Image 1 (cartoon, rainbow, N blue to C red):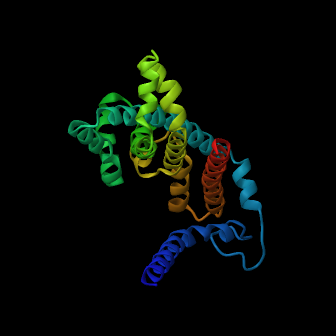
Image 2 (cartoon, rainbow, N blue to C red; image 1 turned 120 degrees about the vertical axis):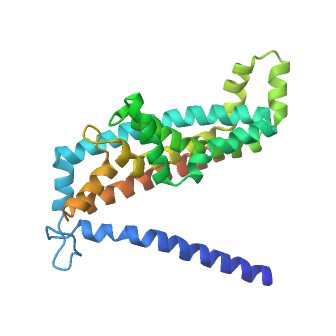
Image 3 (cartoon, rainbow, N blue to C red; image 1 turned 120 degrees about the horizontal axis):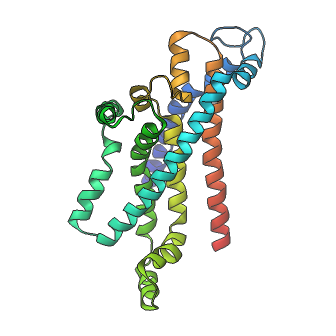
Length: 264
């Protein structure tokens, strides 16, 4: 009985925390359909004019495109490098490997403003300020720990005898990784890729520090829109941003369930 009550309390606390995190974001949905030209609730009628402005504005469309390109490329880099790091650390399995793992997880522990200042300091002499390459690399570094965690979790359930059987049959290490290890840990890789994409898609602090005029991602345009005016188009863009993030999570969950049914 005590365990049941404790479990219910934990579940209730989890739902309360989740609602406190989600409810503020939901405010953007009614604000985005207001008929006014400033941020307000649609008390006097619903209008889709701000979504039309969002989808016809060259500035907003350009920001959507830039964010999508940066998020996809940085997710690919983070997924590839994070997966290789996770496999390498899994095979080393020593104190040195754990020290390297702790170092790679530092971007999760360092405050974003500190990371932004560090990138700004190092990107200046490299000529990467206000460049797509600079932001893609920065986002990939920030997302790499997420991939490392998800892939390492999959490797924890990997049966080492599969690798031993592959090597005993004459397969090289690269062939074993490609044909044996990667297919088994594919769900962890996919999860890491989704998280890396979402991190880059929503990232704002580092982008504000290392971009000026040439690169204008969607979160940065949202930031500028909130500072310079109160156009409800900002709320419409926020709604689209939330929906794309939710779509990425839903697609990942559906594909994961489908793979689980196929393996079963």
